[in-house]
Structure formats: C-alpha cells, structure tokens
Length: 313
Image 1 (tube, helix red, strand yellow):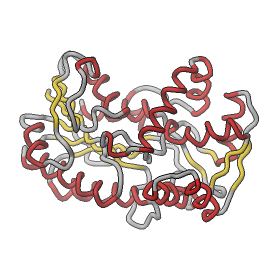
Image 2 (cartoon, helix red, strand yellow):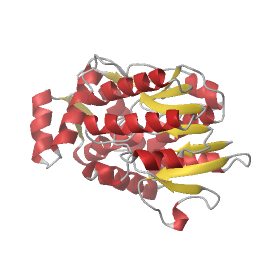
Image 3 (cartoon, helix red, strand yellow):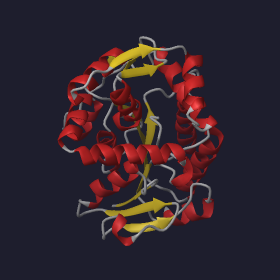
Image 4 (cartoon, one colour):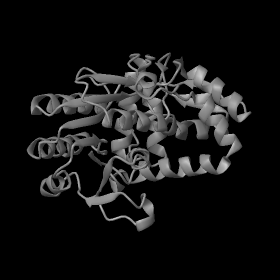
C-alpha cells in the first residue's frame, strides 16, 4: 500500500510518517512545502515537495497513492480553505482510494470558532468529491494549550476567557496514532472523535497543572475583551488573536465537552491524560522545552509549514 501524508514536516504529520514508516508493507510519501534535510525523516520514506497552494505539485505527489493522510493546512481561514480545496481536488483527480482526514470535534458551520467552520467545509468538500473517506475529529491538543499553562506556571494564574467551558484535551501523539490507524484500514465513511480520557473545566486544568508541575496555578476567568487587549499588548499577530478568541468562544459554548472511546477502538490503546503528559515533562524537562519552542515558532510563523498546526486548533 502506498500512503501519502500532507504536512509531513510538522509535528503531527511528521509523527504520522514515523508511525507508518515502521510498517514493512507500506510505501510512505511525505508531502512537504520544501525539501527537508536528509535526516529529518526515516530513510525509507519518499519525500514529495508539494505546497498546498500548488495543484500540479499536489497531483504529482498523489499519483498512484492508495491512501492520503490529510493533515490540515494552517493560517487565515480563507487561505486554509483554498489549500484544502486544492488537496481534495488533487485526490479526486488522481483517484486516491481513501482519504483519512484531520478535522475537529467542533466541526460546525454555526460555531464561533473560525477553524470549526473551515473543518466542516473541508468535510463537505470531501463528501462532495466522491473520494472514500474517514475523518479524525480531534479535540484541542495538550501541546497547543501548553503555551498558556507554561505562562501560568510562571505567574501562578491561568487567565483565560473560557468561563465554565469544559474541554477534553488530547495528546498530539494520540491524534497521530488515530490517523495512522485509519490510514491502514478501509474507509469508514464517518467521523471518529479523538479525545482525551477526561473532560474538565479550566479550573480543573489548572489544578492538574499545579499537581503535575508542583507549583501553584489557579484559573481566573477574564472577559473576552480583556483577553484580547492583553494578548494584543504582547504583540500577538492579529490573525491569531482572532483565531484564539473565537476558539475560547467555542469553549464557552461547551463545544469541546466530549469524551469518546473512538481512539481506543482504532488503536487498542488508552489515550494519554493531561496529567500524564505534564508529569512526563517534569521527568524529561528538555521535552517540555522542545514542545514550548515548537509551539512558539508555530505561533510566530504559521506559514512555516502547513500542517504544523497551532490549532486544534
């Protein structure tokens, strides 16, 4: 089986490539925006340079591909949707037999979250294309949320506009494993919710953080306009200010208040909890620093590699 993976230079897509490359029966194609250093990916992996904005390159990369693992692009929503339209069109033109696509638990045109709308429109594009599909609807990533937790570790306060919204944070590695499992199976023709093992509000997240990192952290709910003003004062790019603000609006609407066992059914494994990930970083502090640096870099230059998602944002 020949499997291609978009966003292969990003944290999620790269992990999917690693998981698939470890299976002898698979030929894996890593699709990236630019040529990577030789050591960046497993030696047996074929690299195809194909920008989401380059339809001919996408078609060339997908030639003779049986399954596509479609890791999302990133950045402003209109550009992201155009990128996704290009990928779906290329997959249909090359008669790809299965697209295992990343989406989000909140994939809804009525959501205030900009990427929830993009993800639902992307699902609709795939449905209309006739290409067989499976959707991995992921919850918000622990690694993404960790930027706020790290700041709270320093200040003692987790100041966010989430009200009493509840979230089932999920480990990015678990999302990668779910996508890899879908890729080697038959198209399911439905979505699979990939969540953590527990759901909690921001006060609960602060409590787990304090316990795992052995430092006081308390949640302070702040108004949305206060968050916007404080985030803008840090120099946060206007697009990401809007994206994060719209995400917290969806949290306040309880759109991430869901726990599902689809991950275990797909992989035979139990999902990692927030406490597991944070505690592991205490044991391996370098891992925490690498995660924070990766997230910081993605936030400051989202165009560096589509698929290196600051979302799930």
